[in-house]
Image 1 (tube, rainbow, N blue to C red):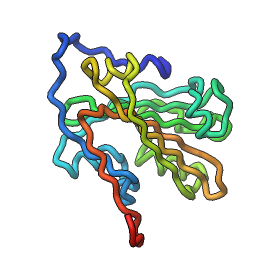
Image 2 (cartoon, helix red, strand yellow):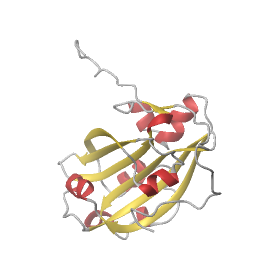
Image 3 (tube, rainbow, N blue to C red):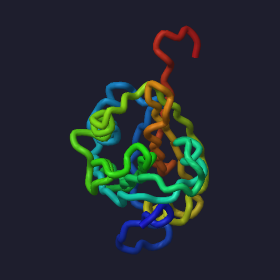
Length: 200
């Protein structure tokens, strides 16, 4: 299974039969207390009174798409390590989240093992000697690809919001790119003011 084939097997549904979608909040930028949790999504959903679920869809190398390659500082098509999961709120699929890592830094490490990293992905990265310095995050609204629409159970005409967040080591090396594909109709995106700023 690769980047374009992350559809889970599920019962067929009739046209127009979209599951009722809870509205999930995704704060931009991510609040530090949430970012430091074992699972960003689980922490967000539970704070909103939603039942969170996670299913790992794929762990392994795959060719880097152009935007992932640019974020990680590798050539387009160069293999990178991908960790892809489906996120559900009240049993409704709301996001597909994929972590990407450079193979020259993470090949052969526990991050390539199947299943979830315990106690958290960030702890797993730091256990390998990497320390985060800063992150950059951007958001794009667009129509879904066919696999995204099928995985998220989207009806025709629905859009997704793609959030790409790259974390850099203290020295500036990109060490983790997280791409989150959100069902737009099932999300709201609060934008927070930078602490200490006197203008918004």
